[in-house]
Image 1 (cartoon, rainbow, N blue to C red):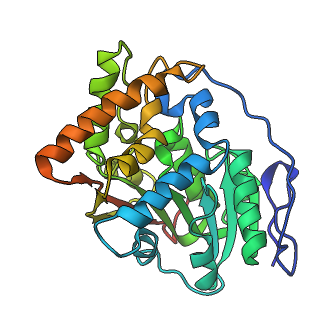
Image 2: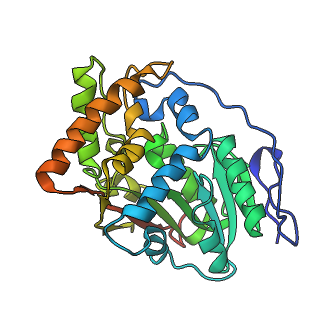
Length: 311
């Protein structure tokens, strides 16, 4: 099987999927976004390498109230079958890829961050997975029309400036009858961290940023249905149960701590915010006897109509 991409890039060749592929870095235009969560400087800092994301993924693995795996739960809604090609947009270091391979699927992994592409590619080589990894923009996918059976975009659409463009692109590259899966958080997920952060930031003279999930959460079914009319939403209730203040602060410091509209370039905010947030969380721990932080999440599942006249 062979796939061609737009813009002259070939990502898959006829026959065997390569274990390692090298792609030229694609230049992206910078934009002066006022919204913190799509600010290019923040995204480069947060996702230029997988370290911070892995801290959060490990926290979910170690401290979740529910013992079952969110990834497995989400994929259970995705109707995976051997031989399908899955496009993973915003793939990060490739958390889903071994599961997709185990289901008999081929994987195209795409991320805006070249560091994440390298991490996903490195994991694929280490695990012997036939993953094709490339750098690209969710708003202008470097793939031809109707070339994949499944598209997934997991916990990433809140970072995309033009979500409508990204959803239109997902629909375009899907084959008729193909499925899309979009995972995200509930609107009030991780409220304790957000409230503690805002309280500390204001006390120190910073302007806290709005919640990341305000841009795309489980309440955005209407937006998804503009492109996938039969889309449904599936919710999974869960919570963090942090065994110690240190474990909670490590999670907070991996992302929430940088949620400031006036984020200092020198990183000086971290040393100032941590003691304030620690005290706020300690008060909660003393009052409740534990650090339980609800973190409901879920997924949208939609299908590209078989009779669809649009690409």
